[in-house]
Amino acid sequence: MEKEKHSEKADWLEAAGSIRLEDYVYDLPNERIAHYPLEVRDQSKLLVYQNGSIQHRQFSDLPAQLPANTLLVFNNTRVIPARAHFQKPTGAVIEILLLHPELPTRIIQDAMLVSRQCVWECMIGNKKRWKTGETLSTDIEIGSQEVKLEVAYVDYAKNHVQLSWSADFTFLEIIKALGEIPLPPYLNRDTEEADKQTYQTVYAHHDGAVAAPTAGLHFTDRVFEQLESKGIRSSFLTLHVGAGTFLPIKVESVTAHQMHSEQVVFSRKLIGDLLASVEMIVPVGTTSLRSLESLYWFGVKLFRKETEEFGIEKLYPYHAAEKVLPSPVEALREVANFMDKNNLEQLTGETEIFIFPGYHFQLCKGLVTNFHQPGSTLILLVAAFVGKDWKQIYTEAFEKNYRFLSYGDSSLLWGQNALQ
Image (tube, rainbow, N blue to C red; front, side, top):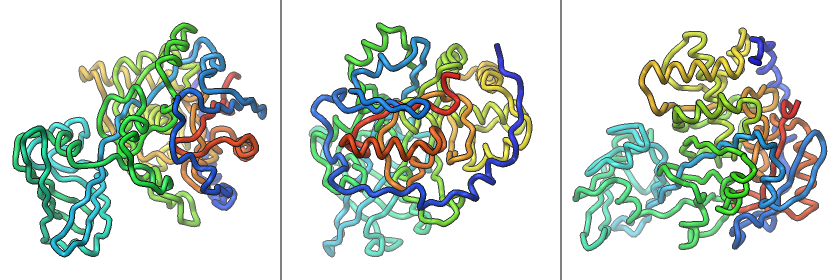
């Protein structure tokens, strides 16, 4: 039965005012960071948390830990070799990390197919050595053909860089020949050949991320077979993870932290799957969770006839909660009707949603996730999801020698609104 409409008190943002970042920082020695993955993905540890109780399993046990009516939602983005190096005649090396396409399109899947020229927002390493007006170039080989690639600023202040190449290859072909997989900075090592496979999920499909949705790295064909045999359904969305996921919070007021916008893509099939399983939706990874919660808030915007443009601002949920909210089913039906009315098989948007303690989760009951950096936005998200018990969870993980961060172990967390 559909939930009644309800209103939330305008205390969501007030809760943020009481957040002290120091309360979400813990000591993470370098030796507890997993610098390499396990040889067999699903042999990682799995911490299972529910209502203050913690159990320790192996990731291959995940299917047995999920109710049969669960819908698992995966992020099927694929990490692109987004880091490239250019050497100036002086010997200085300039590093370019692709962040987001600007021209001729901001749609990432279309930007991968552009030929000859494009403009991207980038992160520039050694920027002081690369002045505006200077063109850098390199020769790359694709098959038996040599291609000249040139890069130059079109907007120095915004780090918008134009890339031009001398043959009719797609941009994806160019970066695959030139670039390298950008490992997280906390791994503090160079990318190795094996990372091309191990830093991708087995279900990665749509190119465009600069970081992997790492909760999904534990899944194997064997685990998917076990999920299917139990009747647990799987569905997919795409959020192209940006480099902003690694940025620590450095401001006293957490709400002032800059959340970089990331592109999300939802299929009409996914919306149907969500409506059919709205009571037990479990995202795989914080990126899937943020995407699903953003989808709910787009439904709110449609419900209130605020806009038909999919863009969820950082603090929109906290302001929107001051008025009556539609139920999850109502919000999802708004999205489904919008897609049907506009003959859309897929819906593309942008989100910079910021989830911290005080947030009320709308769609997600459980969460499969790794163990995150201290003082990060993702720790705040976990704390919002499980409450103050996040400290107990991380303490247990330390005591049981769990491996932390991207290549580390996993957890299945049931939220405060789960299994009620």
